[in-house]
Image: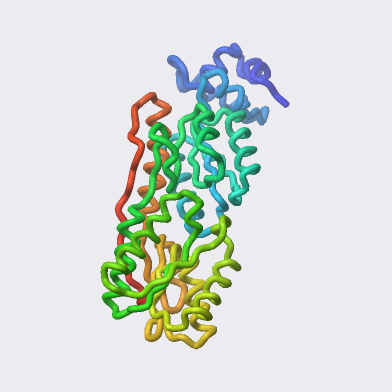
Length: 325
């Protein structure tokens, strides 16, 4: 493997000059920079990014830990995070945890060893103290860990209220909510809280069903929906905790001959692009994913620069009615 000394020898300059070119330090003529870059190309030299980050105490890399990039919401969110990070001169190191505590801890250790400048957490299985001990700029999605760690989320309570109110306004009187387990201690549980409080305020009958601690199990969603129609066949309105759950609800209705929206009305949460491909197109509470991704990156960069940041960043949601309500 060619070294920085090999580049210097070929370019006819000192190793210090090559280092200055690589790090863009001090005054350097365009002719000199071209000479060094030409030598690098001819030798197929690639800088050691870890060594460079150690020398300048900055890696320009942000770590992102999510349950899995194949999940539509996290896939779209990751895309926005990567795009904004890139525009700010940063690269993204992506980790899929699948909500596995050991895997999440190993990824955190790996990111710290890689000298990332900060970590954005979309997967939350560890204890509060584990996050505090990272000693890195940190931003979380949908979980309030401590007053010292900023979090970004959509307005989950308002979203739940909007969804439930829409179902009631459409004439639904026997409502159901299907979502993740409340013991996961994430802010998205406020969607269920809003659902139940809004249903009570309007005198509507309601039932809430939730998954176990693995909140991304598609088979578990189908089992919950089978349970729902078996135990509560009179249900005429479903508020799903995500658009994926809403898609499962649409499938469950079609299998059982329940017409949507004539017999059962369905609304999801997230606003993923995929929902428009389903028939009928799913109504949803849209999270501002692009704004959330940009904000998460900005909060990391502000912490890197030593700026004070607030602990809570709650972004507004929008009701986007499709054909299922």
